[in-house]
Length: 280
Image 1 (tube, rainbow, N blue to C red):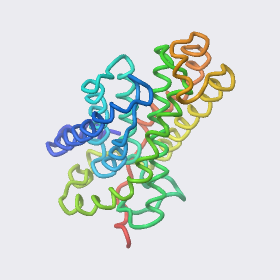
Image 2 (tube, rainbow, N blue to C red):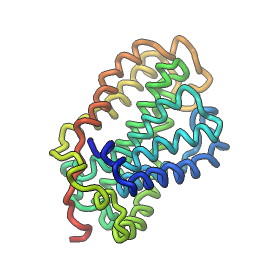
Image 3 (tube, helix red, strand yellow):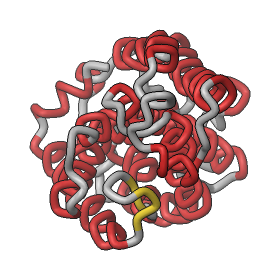
Image 4 (cartoon, rainbow, N blue to C red):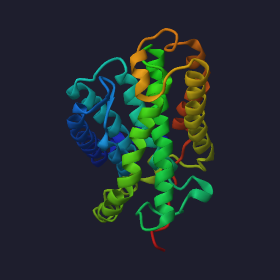
């Protein structure tokens, strides 16, 4: 996905990175006062921003989401070792929607994401779920490696936190913004020439994103809850650092293949260009 790097040649894309980061952080920070897991995660209404901005601003939203989350951690008092995994996880949160739009086979509308049809909304919700799970498993695996929390605690809370608000509010917000941003010439595909964007079918990237995300989610929860007996959701917070549940090689090494699959998405996903205008 060379556009993740070639975008830095374009001033307007850099401005969109700054805009995405600033707005994401600005909405994140006030909600730090409503923690779900103190010092780790909180109610995140701001999660509606990454998938919407991803489909508007492409790679600028991926970088902006990652940077904005880091700013939110620093300014909100939750910065720590886990912030590195938060940076990567949030990068994927802003990456997957634009990279996979139009690549979901029978679940794709084949149209621009203007949210003017039920199929477009369905595709948006599916991509929001994939990106939510990808972000969650990266962070949950990372904090398992750091011996902070069992995978099942963060893997489930972050998935729900990342999915619910954008699934409900995202189609409405994107429907309001897409036409306007397109008229202003600020869609990322209007700013970047095709020569700066990865080309190809993208089928392998889509497969790796789905397998990496949901594979890690299912296997991680099965090992963490079913084998090790970790409580899920907030009940597991009390087991922070418990050596019988956290940082075990069983969970860490079993999820490495899925983490590698997500890494390979960066090299195999291909944004689909030339989509039909909505409603045609």
